[in-house]
Image 1: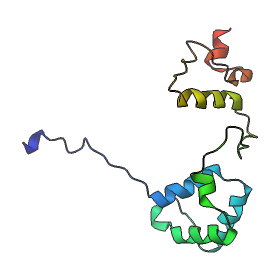
Image 2: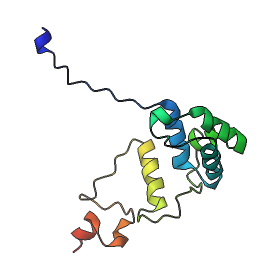
Image 3: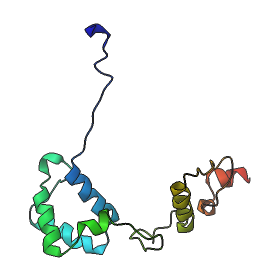
Image 4: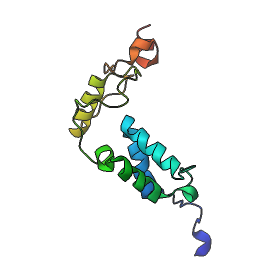
Length: 136
């Protein structure tokens, strides 16, 4: 029986939950989080993406010292009209499109593939992609 079992077919990867929370704050953070990063650095946080060097207590103390609420960046529900830290970046896809997609996802509706029908995401303005190419 042992010969029939493929021992290499199962691979388990995991990520530390504390590090995941920090990544969530950094991904959604605004300028207030910069003070936390500097405070953590001043208290010894360095190479923290390597789990053997990650010290969650340094980061938690930095959030406390700077008066920054982790839940504000990670767990609260956001309004679709909220201004996000990355809203100034123009990747071509409009915020209106992203809102429509969010609402469609919440309704369980699938947006057709761009090759089947353009969904007016806004990326065509860069002169590339499937929508643009099909019009030439």
